[in-house]
Each structure stands twice: as structure tokens, then as C-alpha cells.
Length: 270
Length: 223
Image (cartoon, rainbow over all chains, first blue to last red; front, top):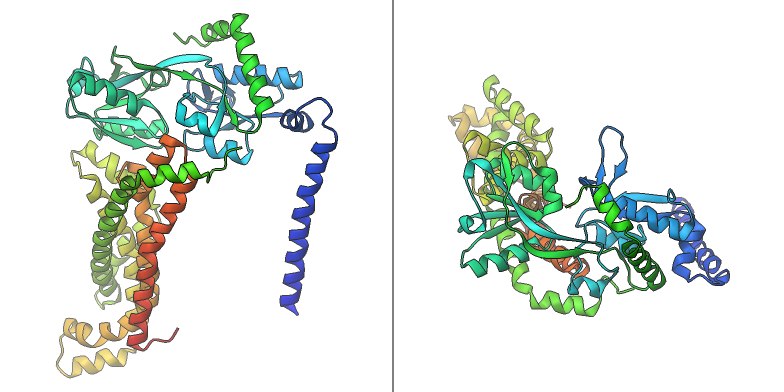
């Protein structure tokens, strides 16, 4: 008796789920007059879901005092929301990390990602990227006490990098050119790399300079070296091509009108 | 959209198989050493916990309560980033073996203690009356009988120990999970990477569970 009840309930649940999906699909399908389905879905929802960083000061940073996420990329997201929905405040910001931003795009949890996402060929195979809105280069943060003056002093040393960041490749190429050998340890989050630098597990902390500046303190210094400038783009899911185009157009318009430059100044980047 | 499991992503995975091979070897090594450590600690502290001496019972409680009530991640993070501030820089493999071994040692100690206490006290008294020392009676009479009782829960511990070596990924430990994270975050081909990793963990854990089941059968424990 009990078994039958459970079976019946599960069946009901499955049917509910299936019909739920079906209904949603028809809804977005039958009203698609001029908007592409991906844009339409955002308009129907009334809010643009954006993945941003929350641990990168000036780009996407959640202020622990106010609990608000602010930064250059947040402003970009708002500009895009304004373009689609006519209201810059209709953004639903979600914290992403280097590791979660890909899966969140795939699952549709976020529509776009503006999270210090470096454009490269391999990534372009999986996601649509807008034209770059910012160019940053990789830098090195070291302890003052160690007395390093550049990458050349780091022969045989260990460098902490973040997973999903391109700094490993950049530093490796530069080290090869200098004819020195460095090894890498990868960590999940930036604070973990900072902890590893403090405890001496790594000799240098290497990510994009803009991110690095957020971790500068009294005992550390950013070396003057810069490596392989890399471009940040706004990513969206392959298939949501109308959205990708709209995002790209917005970025280019903002570049032309000087708005991007103003934002860069506003957030004192460079 | 491009599927997370698109074929070209699998091809990239096959091309870079050595990355995963290396991680697999490190995970096996860390798991084997940690299991040896956990069994050693578990048996010693398990016997401590069942002993008629107050001091050893107190030691057992301190060890078990402290370890069981703090997260493994914190313990490992402390060994990795905390100890260097005190001047102790352990290699990352040692951190893994020590962290995971000590952690599961506490759970195994509880399993062993419960196993010993499940053997009727008459067995120990009979042993002692025949001239066995306490340690001798433990070793020759109580523990062999307790072993049959503790095999099933012990297997659980061994299997979760293997899986818990994945905390090494957090401290750049070079284990399977670390290499999978690293590779999939470079390429963003996370779909095939984590499927493969799941299968590799299964390849380690399933034979372990099967072996333990066979041992149980031979020891005459049902279920």
C-alpha cells in the first residue's frame, strides 16, 4: 500500500516536472514576435542574471560593511540591463568564481558573466565572448622581506596562481624566455593564495594586476614586471547568439562614447 | 549551445591523460599511507578507549572529540598554512597523509572501541584467569573476535578515507581532484574531467569494498 502511494506520488512529480517544462517552452515560443528567444526570456523574467566576482576590488567586490556588490564590471552589467530592460537596476548579481562561471553559464543560472574573464581561443569554443572591455596584464606579488626585484630572481621558486586563470601560462612563457625555471601551485580562491604566500608555501602570488592590487598590504609589494597583456570579455552561452550580439554592441557603443573610459577612471583602474 | 560533454572535449581529455594518471598515482599513494596511519592510530586509541585505565580513556576522548568535532578541511588547512608560521614546513603529501590519516584514525578508534566492548567481558576474564596479560588477552582473544564485528564499519571508513583525500585539492596537493580542477579550469572542459575523476575514484573504492565484503564472508559475518 505504502509502496503504491510512493510510486503514485513520484509519477505525479515527474508528470508535474515534465508538463512544467513544456508549458514554459510554449510560453517563450508563441510570443516571439521580434525578440530572439534568448532576449525574450530575459524580458519575460524582467531581470538580467549576471555572474560577477565578489572578491576583486574595483571590478566586482562585495563590501562587507554595506553588503553591496560594486565595481567596474557591475556597472557594465547594469548598462547591459538598461539596454535590454530599460532599467539599470534590473540586474540579479550572482557571485561566481573562476571555477563556477562556466558551469553557471551552461546551466542557465546566469545569462552573462562579467568576471575578469580572459578571452582565449580554447574558451571561445565553449562560450561566446564580447569584444574586450579591458586589458590587463599579469603581475607578481611578493613579500618585501624576500627582496625580489623581478621575475629573474624567482629561479627555482614556487608561484601561486588561481585555477582557471591564464597567469600560469603567461609566467611560464616569460620564465622560459629568461631561461629560468619556476613551479606552480594552483588554488581555488585568491585569499587561499594569499594565505599560502604568507605561510611561505609559495614565493610569489601571480594573477592579473588589477586583482593583485586588492591583496597588497604592508608586508608585500607588486613587482614592476608585467606579462602577456590579456583581454577581458563578457561571456554568454553558445546558442544565445542574439544576446551575445547585443552585449557586444553595447560594449562597443560604450567604448565609442567614452563611457568605458569614464568607468575605468571612476574605478581608478590604471 | 556546446554541450559540456562535446566530443572534442573528450578528445582533449584523452590527449592529456597523463595529467590524470599522475593525479591518480598521487591519490593512491596518499590514500594507502593515510589508511595505514588511520588503522594504526585507530587500533591503539580504540584499545585505549576500552581499557580499564582512566588515563588512556581520557586520551582516547581528547583525540576522538577534538578530531571528530572539527572539519577535516580546517585541520588540513592548519597543517598546510598554520604550521609554517610556527616554523614547521611539512611537504604537501605528508600534510595529506597526516591530515586524512589522523582524521579517520579517530573514527576508526570509535569503531574499534565499540567492537571491543561488544565482546562479552567473560572472555577477557577467562583469558586473564588463564594467565594472559591484559595486552596478551586483548591481542589473542578479544581483538580477533572484535575484528569480525568491526569489518563492515571499518570498510566504510576506508572508503570514505579514499574519497576524503580529495581535500588535498584545496592545498594544491597534486592529487586526482587537484589535477582535475586544474585541467578543467584551464580548458573549461569540466564535463569529461569530472566524469573521469568519478570513475577513477570508483575504481579505487569499489575493489576495496569488495575485498572487505569477501573478508567478512570468510570471517563468517553475515550481511
